[in-house]
Every structure is written in C-alpha cells, then in structure tokens.
Length: 321
Image 1 (cartoon, rainbow, N blue to C red):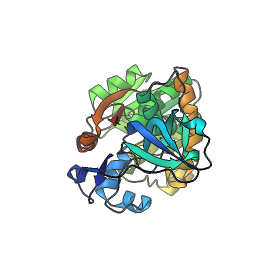
Image 2 (image 1 turned 135 degrees about the vertical axis):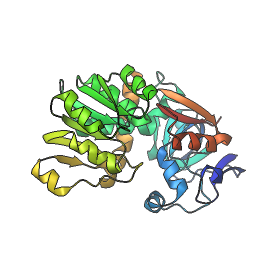
Image 3 (image 1 turned 180 degrees about the vertical axis):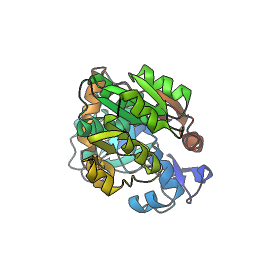
Image 4 (image 1 turned 60 degrees about the horizontal axis):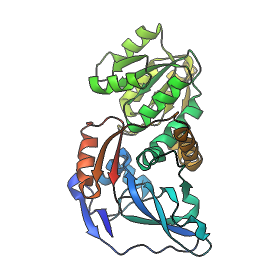
C-alpha cells in the first residue's frame, strides 16, 4: 500500500511517498481502508521538529497524521465481524496511508447522513470545536472573540458560538477569511495582523468581551487576553505561535479564568466523545465544516506548503482511495 513518510525533520520536501506492506490487525484491532485523511497544522509542527515533535515523541521515518474516515476491511481476534464493511472515523497516530490498523476503541461509526469528507473534517476540528464550546459555555447576547476564526476548528467554533446566540467577533488575517467567518455567523470581524486590533475589539464591544477563544497562541494570545473584561474567561488552545504565556499578575488582578485544554490534556482525554458529538451535530446539519481543499495523498507536501502559507480557509483533507 501507499503511504507518505516524514523522511527527516524539515520542510514540506521531506514528505515522500513509499510502498509498504499492508497492515494486519492484532487482537482487538481493526484495519480501516481510508478514503480521506485529516490534515492538521499539528502535522506541520511535528514535521518541522522542535517542541511538537518532542511532545508527541516522533522519530523519522514515520507516517504522519491523526486518522481519517474509511471502511473496516479486516478485524482481529476479539472483534465482532459485524464491523466489516462499516464506515467509521478512525482516530489514530498516523493517517497519511491507504490503510491503518488501530484498536477497536478508537473508531466511531459514521451516520448515513454524514458524507466521508464531512466526517473527516469533524474528526479533529469538529471534536475540538465541540470541546471548546463545552468549556467556554458561550451565552446568548454575550460578546465572544474567536481568533484564527477561518481555520478548521475556528470556523466550526464560530458556527457553534453563533448558534448559541452569542455575538461573535471573528479575528482573521485576510479579507477573504473575514468574509468567510461572517458567512458562518460572526457579527463583526477584525484583522488581527493590525497592531491595534485589540483596541478595535474593545471599542466595538464597548469595553471588551466576556469570553475569548485563542486559536493562535504566543503574542496573539496575550492580545486576546487584553480584550477580556474583568471576570471573563480565556480558552487558549492555539499552538501555531507556541503556547500562551499570560501575565499571572494581570490574570489574578482582573480575575480572568484561563483554560488551557491542550496543555492540560482535556481535549485529548475527551476527543472520542467530542468527535461523536460532532458527528451527531453534523448528522442534524447543525455543524457544517467547509472543505476548502482536497489533495491527493502523494501531494501531501503541497498541502503542508499551503497550510504554512496560511492560504486556506476552513478544512483541508487528503484524498486516499
């Protein structure tokens, strides 16, 4: 079968297609023939080496990815044969491959109402958006800031937050991305590449937001924190620019609640339940991820280049079979 390897840490050029033996299911495992694989910016960070690589303990050569959607084609001992032929989401530690073997406990059946591309887009970004929504608990009429609002998770979070009746301010870097967020339900949009973007948020809301979702990390997280009113809440999950490092004195003085679900492992611990919730919302039409680009498996390097260049809005996927 075909896979894509990270041959060494570095730029997109280190992604190379290869032929490897088909996987065999072990006890309590299934083999899934993927149709679409999820692509995350996390894949880019791990491929580059550095903190993400150390955190996830990857050593080249390895097959990147975090799973996808497909059909169960083989089952191991201890697994009911009724799974054969079923369409499933597969949450794995690999994904840029035609087939993957993984434990039965890491798959979810896909509802008939959800097509494969939508299911793949819900696997991580949908699950992340649902998890963040549950942590942030946006309220009707409440001002809520969402940074990186045009990304895979951010765009779905805009839908959920606006759907709760909150007044969403979507921060994104280009006019197209801001227009995209507006269509998803954002009331206002902000260009967060501008040096005074946080001032604009405070002015537009008459003082600040009650809740902010930080999808960028680093200095942008600090700016997002400055837009929150005293007693408000920051949910920081972005790692593109490193983890958020808020000023503890400022946080204490202003009684800001900081929630860091990536660092604490909350999103990881709740991933499968949140993915199941995302699938249910997708089946009801309440969560509709936008697929902006689909790349053939052998063009994984192009997908990484476009992610790094911030060219994409919504979700990008790899087409496998």
